[in-house]
Image (cartoon, rainbow, N blue to C red; front, side, top):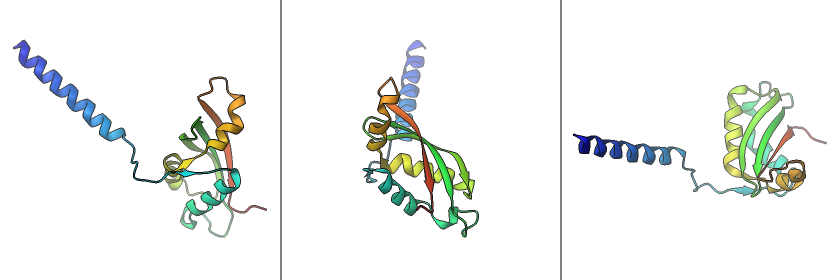
Length: 132
């Protein structure tokens, strides 16, 4: 009886570990885009944020993102902190694209002296659809 319980436990444990790995594995077929500076990031964001994301397509859109970036430039989290004229149903889509496609090493380099742990930096990134 004990041997059967042990085999079942091992099987369930291996099944759980395998399924967790497949659920949380990243899709590496997508090409990461290394962004060298804020101007290029703004241009990439222009192409990412489509007119359907606007509440009113005739007005400008303003979004402030909170980003967590590691020393390699990988974005570990992106969240919309504040927005104007953004249809909130697209917030997740935008943040997911930032996290999965952008490498923002320049942000880490700019803010690394403000954080003591040295692994991550946290910052706000303002995006405006109309810039001077």
